[in-house]
Each structure stands twice: as C-alpha cells, then as structure tokens.
Image (cartoon, rainbow, N blue to C red; front, top):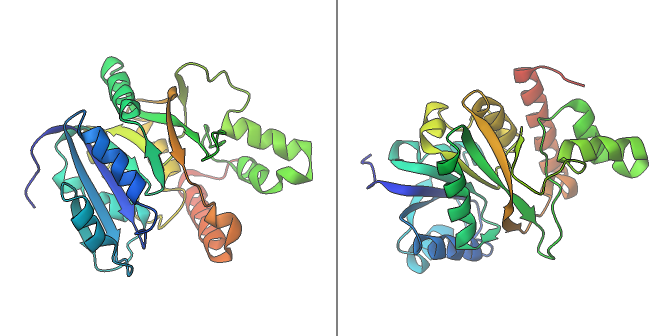
Amino acid sequence: MEREDAARISACVVTYNSCYEVFDALASLEAAALEMPMSVYVTDNASADGTCEWISKAFPFIRVIENSKNRGYGAAHNAVLPLLDSEYHLIMNPDIVFKPETLKRMADYLTDHPEAVIATPRVLNADGTEQRLPKQQPTLRYLAGGVLRRFGKVFDKWRAVYTGARMDLTRPAEVAFATGCFMLIRTRVFVKLKGFDESFFLYMEDSDLSRRAMNEGRIIYCPDCTVTHHWKRASHRNWRAGAAHIRSALRFFLKWGWRL
C-alpha cells in the first residue's frame, strides 16, 4: 500500500455497525482537518448497516478501509499502520465529539514536551460531568473496585485511586493509562510498538498499549483538553460484553503478571 502525503496528524476511527452514531465524531474530525493538515481513516469491521457506503458519501475526504470480518478493535486500528506518515496519530472511538482546539492543544503539548509520547484528555459525559476513567494500570483490586463499589467504602476507595479521583489533576500530570476512546500518540512510537496487541479482541488493549508506551516516554493527562464520550458501558449491561471484558483482563494479567 502506498503511503499518504505527510500530515502533522493522522486519525483513525474503528466502526462496527456504527452508521447511526459516528456522524458527530467524523464531523469533529472534519472541523479539525480545516484547522491543521490531517489524514483521516475509518476502519470498518464488516458492518452490515451500510456504514461504509454512508461515510464515503457524507465524508469523501475520509479513506475507508473495509475489513471482510470483525477483526476486533486493536487489529482494526492496526490496519492503518502501513499508511502512516504523520507526526502524531489519533486513536478515537466513533462515539466521541470534540472541538478542533482540543486536538491542536494536545498536539502542541507533545511538540513542547518531547519526553511525552501520549497525550490523553479529560473525558466528559454528554451532561458535562466527568467520566472517571482509569489513570493507573489495572490491578485485581482496582478492577474489583469498579464492580463492587456500591457494596462498601473500601471498594469505592480502590476505584478512586484507580481513576485518580484524589489526584491533583488541575494541571497536566503524568499518568499510567491513556484511554483508547481518544488518545494522541507519537506516530513513530505507535509504529515502533506495532500498534495494539491484536490478541486483545476488545477491552484492555489500551491498558496494554499504555504499558508498552511507558517504555518509550511519558503519558500525560491534559485536563484543559476535553472530549465528550457517549459511553454505553456495554460490559456492564450485556453479559457477552462483560464476558469479553473478563477474558481480556485475564489475558492482560497473564501477560503482565498478577497484581493485587
């Protein structure tokens, strides 16, 4: 495959039957592309709802890569690796919206701080409240805290530590986790790491990538950069998604060791 012309930022969104949720995400990318050079890709995991056809018509500047089967989240993102010739690469969910200045601020932070390899934003719910996403690498205790927090203060405390709820996050801070719903990574690092570990079909692939990226530099949480995530929390509502989350957690701990 031929490489695209160099752009400061490349971006990839993975879709799977996402026709009715991806419009705002792609509109956000279109607005950002008007502000800075960008190459935008959508990798589709064999959608049956006409996602690819609709995107090609509505957003002709986006290159759509159609997989013949559902390859999983990480593998689908990795499909763009041979095409990348950017300085920074954006990994993004189809249920995210953001303002162009958010992406520019994150890219500028990485430019001004060469020791940083990933910038991760403050993630908000649709009602403007903050999503308490992890700031640390997962442990058995931290994951249990999220499931059992309603049963006692000790579990809620574990969750608070995991999500950095008690950290001073009013200024950029080094963290150990970058959410896969929206992360900006140095392209050379993403390529060096060969992208996501494709053995993670869904869930925990961002924890694994964060763990490996920390060997290359710092992960920085940027609180003045915000995105809105229309989070479905499928693993909490659907037993199949929940089972997939458990399988991925087991795979993560088998790879990196069992930590309480």
